Image (cartoon, rainbow, N blue to C red; front, side, top):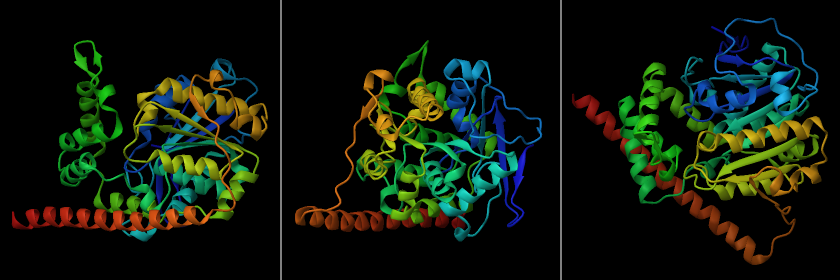
Length: 385
């Protein structure tokens, strides 16, 4: 099995490579996800359904680019994708200390993987927590980035928590008390997809029925994520923060950015993604699609098209202003023309921001109490048996 060994700290990162070609794409998955969660994108970008299990000699790629686009890329020079399990999940190492999990540390894991593969640079696409890690990687080593795609991204701290309503309270309670793959699968489906998508009929079954079986099988084969891994990755989300200097590094480094988000995402709130897109102007393009947190699965064709357009635009050295204002008809996606943020805020705006932050802290306090209470209940039940 292919592993990247971090000689500095003993961490082993499990990875898989799919497809062949000089255009390199690194995929970074989110909280509790494993490498195979990128299935629709791997197939869409490379045409491959099986990984390249054999260990190939690392090859240096200049610019992470091939000379052709679209179908010609896949059929000719091609695209090679690498996906991996973050520390704390799947077949990668699971450190036991929360301090070993931050988006900066996990970005260093991704950078070590690029070195291990012999990739001088690559297109880096991240989902959810993986998008946070991708942001840190882009700020840490901008010369290694050909382009950056952030799917269902959000900020750190209170921004990484969902909006509180009755539906979310119910899901949070069921998630924390899920002890079997079947229980976990039911919760995951409702957080990952829209109800309309799950209720769609596919033959004699609904998508919910089909996906439920797939989720149970996947969770059973990889095992439930350990508490060390889950709490560590949650700590990485909670402590994540992009400084003004890091955002400026991304803006000024010359690569293009696409932010893709599902309008019905109940996990990563859309407003946070829009704010990040504003902060990354003029290099960022905001693409909104009908879908939930796993819009990459719910709308794979649209997502893959947006990703291919990003690769194509990077190859053609498109100017940032042209990229962020592409016409909607070019992709079939809802592309928002986002105005850059104002440097100065008026008094009312400042007061609103203060109130927003206070509500956010209250929001977090409630979630922390609720999570701790639910976990204490689980512990008490176990001890009483």
